[in-house]
Length: 121
Image (cartoon, rainbow, N blue to C red; front, side):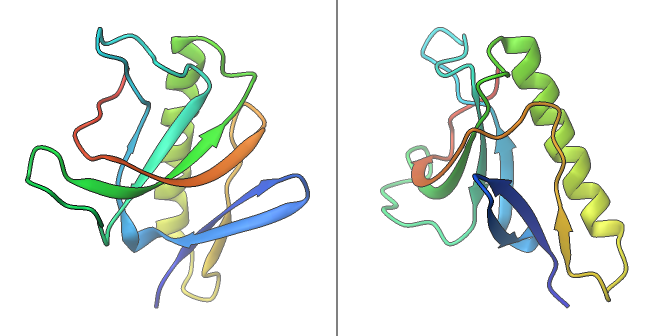
């Protein structure tokens, strides 16, 4: 049975299958500092726009939280999301959708694509 995590923003629910997750990351700039210190990215399987292993693009869900405005807060958001994904995996098969609770309220959810090699803070 597939399991899903549910994110809520502006009274709308967004779900996606856990088994499609490749990685959970915070975007970084070229210097290693956070390029957008309010986002956490969930990179998904089923990549598109592949050019080579180093520059492979994958679908990404960008989760923004204006309260996560420092590297430490983004790390807390990232770690909480990873823990929630683990919690979702541990739920009974009769509960396929798991609502995620994060320390900083979600202020935006966007679907995009990103280079797989983009790192974390």
